[in-house]
Length: 241
Image 1 (tube, rainbow, N blue to C red):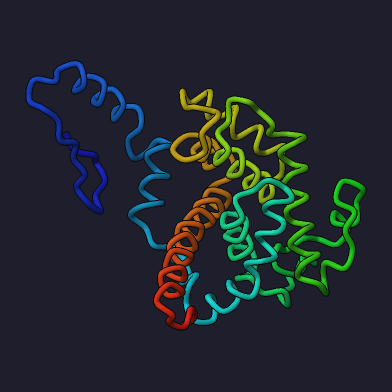
Image 2 (cartoon, helix red, strand yellow; image 1 turned 90 degrees about the vertical axis):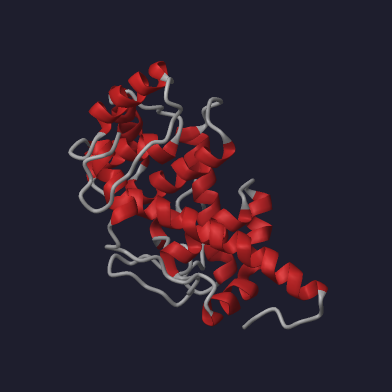
C-alpha cells in the first residue's frame, strides 16, 4: 500500500494476514492522502526543503548558546519551562541575537514588542537593551498564555509548551481555532504534531506550523549539543568549536 506522493514512494510494512490493521490503514490513507490538509502538510514538512533549518550549533551559534545558557536556565526554572525548548524558541526568533530588530518593532532575543512587555501581565522594561530582561519577558508572556488560554489538564507538558509557542506566534485566538479545526478533522485537539498543526495549516497556512516545527528541531539540536558539551568537559577538551 503506497501513498500517491510523487516525490518518493512511501509504504507500510505489515504482516500478511493482518486484515483488520490493513483495513484501518487503508481507511486512514483514503482520508489523509495528499490533497487533504493532513497529507499536504506531511508532504510539505518532509519532502520539500523550502525553509532549511539553520545550524543551531555552528561555531557562532554555539558561542551564543554558551553565553546565554545560564539566563535561559534561570527563567526556565522561574516560569517552569524546559529551558532548552525556551532557548530553541529564542534561536528561532533571533538566532539568540539581542541586537535583532524587526520592521514591526519587535526587539531582542525573544523578539518581543516593547508595548506588550510593559503591559501589566508582563510588566518588564528594558527588553531592548538587556538580554536578561528580554528573555524573562518572553518566558513570562509564554507562562501568561498558558495560564490564561492553555492550562488544560489533558495536555502533556511538551504539548502545552508547543501550544504556547503557536499562540506566541499566531495569537491565542487562532490557537483556539486550530484546536477546534483539528477536532472537526477527527484529530486530537490536545496534541500538536500530526494533529493540531494540521488544523493550523488549514486555517493560516504553513507559517505557524513551520515556526513550531523549527523550534522543536532546534530543541533536539540543543539537547545533542548539551550532551556533547558534557562529554567534552569530562575529557578536559574545549567546549566550543
